[in-house]
Length: 64
Image 1: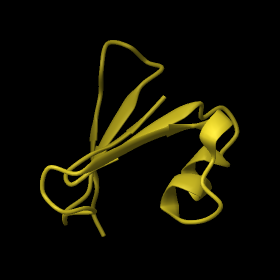
Image 2 (image 1 turned 90 degrees about the vertical axis):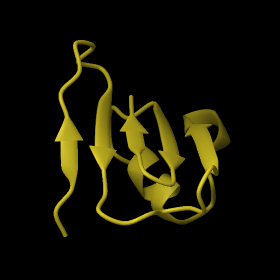
Image 3 (image 1 turned 180 degrees about the vertical axis):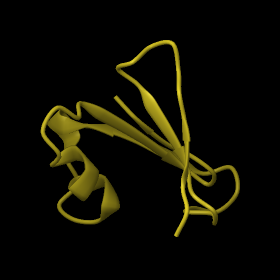
Image 4 (image 1 turned 135 degrees about the vertical axis):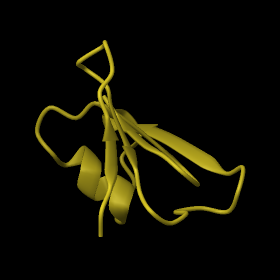
């Protein structure tokens, strides 16, 4: 699966654009390590060393 990655001036944030929707249109979830979900993609992303926060929407995964 190809995922478009956006280069931003703030190198602490990386945006990924998956080819298919991850949520229903208009839905989004933002979590950080203090509110780590018990399982799923957000849990897996936040388990990566250095990742502090993740925003997951219908068209975007934004990682800090």
